[in-house]
Length: 443
Ligand SMILES: *Cc1c(COP(=O)(O)O)cnc(C)c1O
Ligand SMILES: [Zn+2]
Image (cartoon, rainbow, N blue to C red):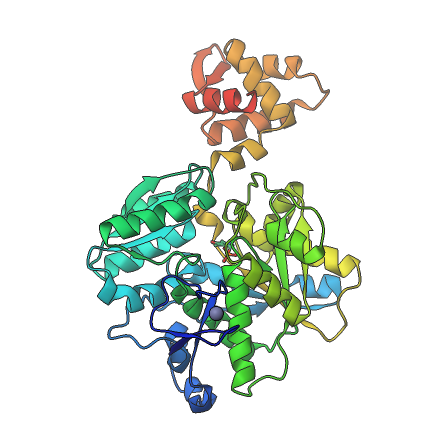
C-alpha cells in the first residue's frame, strides 16, 4: 500500500491527516500489476477476500462482514427494468459500516493503545463498538443529539464510551479529532482517516463479481460510501477487469442535499431530515463524492421526506426492512424511471445500506401520528374517555370500527392505556410517553 497525492504526486507514510500539504485529499494505492482476480474466486466471500487491494495488517479483526446477498427486485417486473438489491442490512451489526470497521480496526490496532474513536450519526459508532469489543479495545463514540435508538442500544451493549456532542455529525467530527489528539485515541472517522474507505470499496468488487451493474444508486450522507464504490471500480479499471465505471447515482433528501445539489447545480438545503444517516450538512468528502459521480457519468436525485415511508414500504414488499436513509433509493429509482433515464438492458443496483430494525427515533412515531390519531390523543389529554365517546367527538365522519382500530394502534404503541372500566365501557387515558409525544408535536 502507498499513500499519494494524486494532484502533485507527493508520497506520504501516514494517512492521518488525510490531506496533502498542497490541500488535495490523499489516496491509498497499491501495486495493481500484482493483482490476480482469479485468486479471489477461490477464497471465502467477504471483505478480506480482496486482500491484495487492502492494507496489510498483522491481525485481522473480523465478524465475517461483506459478501452480502444480491437478488433481483420484484419491482423489476413492474418497472420493466433489471433492478437488483444489494442487501447490506445483513452485515454483522446491520449496516455497510462493518466493511469500514473491519479494516479500520485491523489496521489501527497498533496505533490504538488507548482505544478507538469515531464521530458518527449512528451506524459507524455501533459498528466500531462491536469491532473494538472483539479486539479488546475501548471504543469512544461521539454522536449528535438525535440518534436512532437501536443504534444507541448497540453502542451501549458493546460497551462503547458514549459522548453526546452537537446537533448533527458535522459538529461531532472536529470534537472527535480533538479528543483523539488529547487522549491518544485512533480516530477512524472517514473525514479524518482514509482507511475505512478501503473496506467500503469492497462493495464495488462484489457488485462487479456478481452483477456487473451499469448503474448504482447510493444513499449519500458524508459521501464516503459513494466515493468508496467509485474507488473500487477505479481499481478494477487499473487491473483491467472493467473498461468503464458504472454510473453512480447519489441520492439525498431535499431537506439536506449538499452533495446532490452540487452535482445538479442547484441551490440545496441543509436542514434536518428524518433520514438521520443522511443528515450531514457540510460533508468533508463532498468534493471527492461529486468528482466520483461526475467521472462515472452518473447523476444525483433528491427525494422528498414524504416519499421515505413509501420507499420503506416498497422494500418491505421485497422482504427487506431498511431504514429511511436506505429507502431513499426507491423513490429515486421511480423518479429516474419516470424521466426515462434508463435503457432496457441496464442493470441497476440499489445499495440498501442499513437495517430498519435499529432505526427507531421518536420522529418515526411522530410521522404516523397524524389526523385521527392526533385528535384521539388530544381528546384523551383533556379527560379519560371510552371508544364510543371518542368516536362521537372525532371531527371527521368515519366508521366506529376505524376509530376503534386507531385506538388499538395507539395502545400497542404505548401512547394510551386503559385507565378504568365502568360497566362495559373501557376508559382510556394518555401514557407518559403519549403525553410527551403530543407535547412535542404541538411545539
Ligand atoms: C452512513 C450511512 C449512509 C451514508 O453513507 P455516507 O458514506 O456517509 O455517504 C447511508 N445509509 C446508512 C444506513 C448509513 O449508515
Ligand atoms: Zn498534493
